[in-house]
Length: 170
Image (cartoon, rainbow, N blue to C red; front, side, top):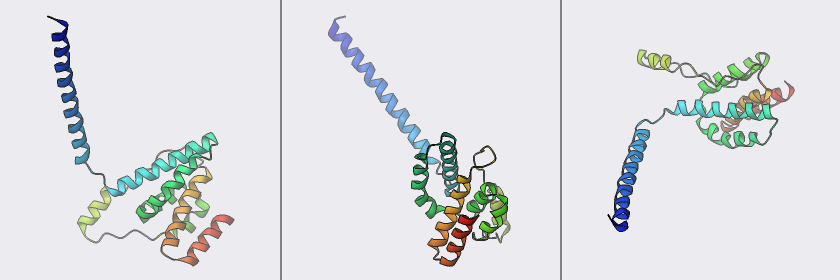
């Protein structure tokens, strides 16, 4: 076999391998597209990622990592549900102020039918990442900041002022 024939054989083999790789990548992309995540699941994952970022920033003494959390607040502002916010406050706010902040968050809707009750029972638990206790005060500040944003968005100025002043004097 001449050198020219060897080169052609390698080219043909490379094309077959590259075509096979492209088909595998397309199949993987299609599999990922088939499983859309529930918006509630995405919200809990986003909040969990922010909590991990806060924890890492506090542990390292790095204030710059908080910038990432602050940038994500606008997305959380639009998607936060009272159920997830209540769970966040229950978990990360100091027990002496917990009831005070929960009063600012509306109670989740009560399911009426048995189907709704079964659906809610299946998704009842909100799991946040495990973080060593005692929690850093930044976790509470994160939760209360979201409460404040929701109050401002609902144009509940008096409640927002009350929440902010209790936070500053708490």
